[in-house]
Amino acid sequence: MRVKCVICDQVNTIDDYDPLAKKLRNRPIHTYMCPECHERIKQRTEERAATGNFRLYRSKKRESDW
Image (cartoon, rainbow, N blue to C red; front, side, top):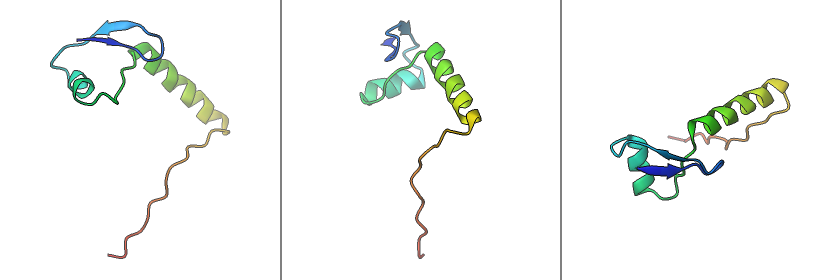
């Protein structure tokens, strides 16, 4: 299966039977990101988190009365 990275527009091929290929075929909202872009984003996020000015906003979990 041929896929295109949403960030750098690099065209890659992945195995048709790979779970990622199935996810991309069945749910068009999911997008593909090449390993280089994924690693670069991971590295930059870790650098920002190390500065202390990085906040990750997550929804608060509600306690159930049950």
